[in-house]
Image 1: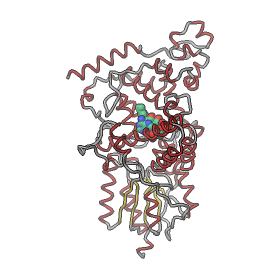
Image 2: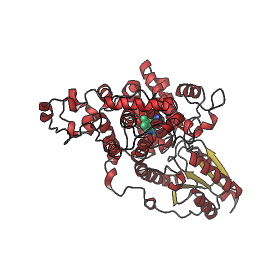
Image 3: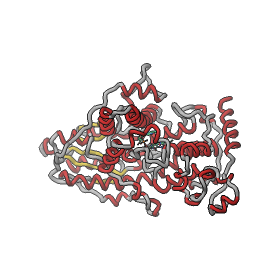
Image 4: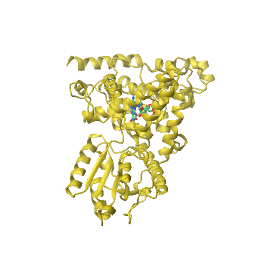
Length: 484
Ligand SMILES: Cc1cc2nc3c(=O)[nH]c(=O)nc-3n(C[C@H](O)[C@H](O)[C@H](O)COP(=O)(O)OP(=O)(O)OC[C@H]3O[C@@H](n4cnc5c(N)ncnc54)[C@H](O)[C@@H]3O)c2cc1C
């Protein structure tokens, strides 16, 4: 095969889009034939293969990508197996002279990709990896002393002084195809969809894929972002972007998001509008910070960043863990969040913090139990952000909430779900309860409960633990690791 006819394999991973995809863009610019490939290789992910909700999303996101490629004269090849073996096969089958991909930063995958690079280069195959998933790559971001950042504010200040490149684009160009396509299994052969009907409600909430990601960003930037600083705290309101699964699967790139937000920032007239956009970008900064931390502290998905927490006296209590997972703790704001998670694959950030705090502080159960459950049930499950979120909640991570600050689920509910709308949406058993009692049904007089059709312990659980006692127990547990 003449050098100019030998294809470039573009290995799609968490970058399931055509726009702002540097690996694809560079391959198309070369003028050579391009073979887009997706490899389902969950065993390559070590302890964290994609969970159930992520697989559901992945299936539909791949269907969307595979559906858009033919409009460019191309197609998506699916394979199943270890990525190294499959790429080796594909290079032989297609005579590919190069493999391009966008980098991932999870520790197991950094190591895997380094091995694959070595293998391919040993076969004289050109390998080019690109930054498609972050604004600022972890290995290129260092503090003044040359080390990684551990505190968000200086991290983001440092990042904000750097240039973000323009999004990559192939415009409406066709993607050159090879003379002969390699074989592909069907998307269905990846068996990503759940066999039980647990995800039945997901399609009512989500449409995976690049065009929906772009629509969601545009909608958010043309309205809600202006009030984001305030509205982002209220789970019953439409104050956040819900872009997290789209960002996780790379259906939209952070450069495109940044360019959109910057454009909006320039046009924003009011101070509060500008503040909303800056706050939104700072939250995207937390995503960057999460990747920075996991990259530089690669064992934090398993172990606390603060070593003293490895001695923390966590409890084992299957019944409480089950009640938490099912949203049956008897604390309405916690239960509403856990039910939203189960039914939609997503939970509002404020409630993630409250429900997470309840698990690790009130129930004294290990943060990794929470991280595991979120991993399986979140459509945006992301190793870096989930690890950061749980270590933040447990007080054992970088720039984390101090352990001694224990969220009171009743006060948090009253403050951020003032009228109880969020609770009523997810806990229909409490629907008829007046706002005065909705955050603490156990305090409601019997006639109020009767009128609302609530039988404590029967139609809705009584609290599985007393928050005030639990708080004191958590503080005592914390003292033990401080003393050692
Ligand atoms: C215990 C816990 C676990 C979490 N697990 C995950 C996870 O697995 N995947 C995930 O994407 N986020 C996780 N988060 C962070 C946050 O809750 C979600 O990113 C956010 O709720 C997504 O909703 P949104 O897209 O509407 O966010 P918006 O408020 O619209 O923010 C825009 C984007 O910024 C990023 N972002 C916002 N807040 C954070 C944050 N605190 N940390 C990292 N990135 C952030 C997300 O990519 C988000 O899509 C977790 C938080 C906690 C407390």
